[in-house]
Image 1 (tube, rainbow, N blue to C red):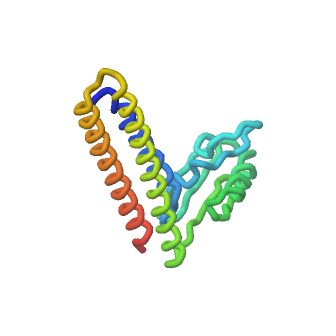
Image 2 (image 1 turned 180 degrees about the vertical axis):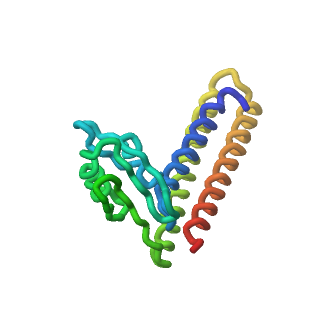
Image 3 (image 1 turned 135 degrees about the vertical axis):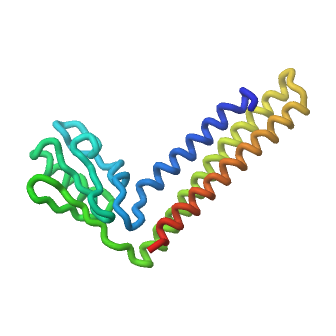
Length: 183
């Protein structure tokens, strides 16, 4: 790949990584510790990720267990989970917090599948915007000593890269939708 196009491919790869991270936070009926990724706990005045204030485990398919490093953190962790948008009520036995994930209803699965599709569309738009920026910068090259044929070739290469990443978004979307719809 041409060095002038490498930065655009890197940006497209980052868009894919962002989409994968987004998909990890969508729960699909099974307990996935990644649903806690965006939750912050007030730890001595500092918003801290849940994974950094306790041990997060998945003892069963639909249960996440959080064992805080300090007992005094149980209430702040519960509060952070309750105010988040994961929609699960935590329960504690004085030493650990358990999150029990209920089975997803058919309607909820369909809603989640729509959300997955929407996020995929946003990912595609981001990739196309990166392509547009790349094409704009290639057109500016035309005003320098770069030949039209070379610019055309770079534009085609950028389009092939764009197509590759758009396909990757589709694959990720299909995989996540299948995971959600599988009962």
